[in-house]
Image 1: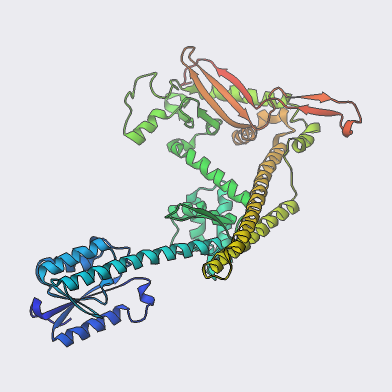
Image 2: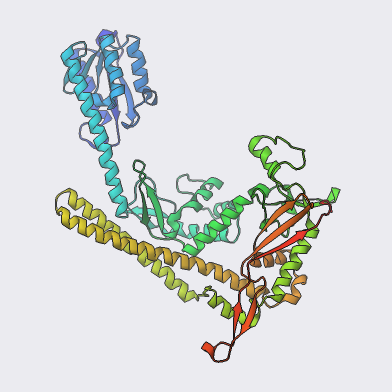
Length: 555
């Protein structure tokens, strides 16, 4: 920049490019600068450059464009009398912002220069022409944005990536996601660690100790980046794209890195972890047999446990008022008994553990469902199919084939819409073909959903079979199990325990929801030869209740 002598002899040159404009010939920052300097020399003026750099036309707020803001302040102060821009859209395509500059230019007597000439905005003709050009620029900006949006939607329908960096584990090839195996193996490891119960802090240690760097920030992983990765549905073979304007959602198929069973198991683990997050405090060193299965029937919160050996206190309680302090800064009635969610009295831990343990083991011992001679038949008759490894691999291959067919069909639909836009096919052919493709896409989506559910059920059945192998035949040996084994045993039979406090009788009512209908089940003998069966299982219910009578919660 050369030294300015006065406002009347200085040409102020404002330069800006957008992502789109950079690709247009002759509109780069350097080109704008050179044309502006050339104009200053023609006028015999000094010049001052205001370089905004790469700011898109979406940054229409003057405050969001610092150089334009500074230029506007200088103009209002009377320091600018001659202004050059490549074209009027460099200032703004937004009519409101353009109007502000037109008004200030007219008020301050500023002459506006562009590559096509100059405007004296005190002249009615030049002012009218400038308004027309501003309107044309704004219309062009809107239509260009709409074309971009529709183009992105068509690309997404055809299975192309919508923009931005691809997730860790993938790269772009011809605008589509493809697996990067070196990263994919760590994605699989991350999900495996979650399924095994590993926390994000443990996973971070695994990644850092193996020198694995995150994609966008070379260095160490953060807990936030690991949790964000675990939310990506891409790894199971699909993701949802939502159009910001219409709200339309499109399910896009992509190469999977993990199977649906692993994905579902990881999400279940994560949701359980989040649900129990409030209990991760100093009491984690204490063991609780039932805490992770229990919920307050009054407010729905997970039950907490407290063991303070110095005060011989050992109790299960609802943390409702504790959460009030965390979420609201306090409770309206912090020390008043009978207020809050209704769980007004804690339960004694040894007493509750003993009651539930005796009930569950008694149900196991009496259950026909769990007896050795009927359990395998029951698994088949109740719809729990035990699949071999080969069957699981075949199911996973089927899902991949369906995903590929879906992507190919979506791409055909996108090409069809493009051909209609350029007039290659008529409306009748287009409507008929589109309907056929959409019907086929619907069929594929149905098959995909069914296959994914089938694969998800496989994980549950295997978990149940493993439980049977570990505990199914050893009812008489259950009391000899370690504390952790007892907890695992209960976890195989009990889905959840809901606890309600009866304030009138000052006792707790526990409702256990079992994994199978083993409460009051039985066997019905059949006539021999009937379909080759000699008996059938009569299912019971999956609910059972018990009452914990009044006892001091401190043990």
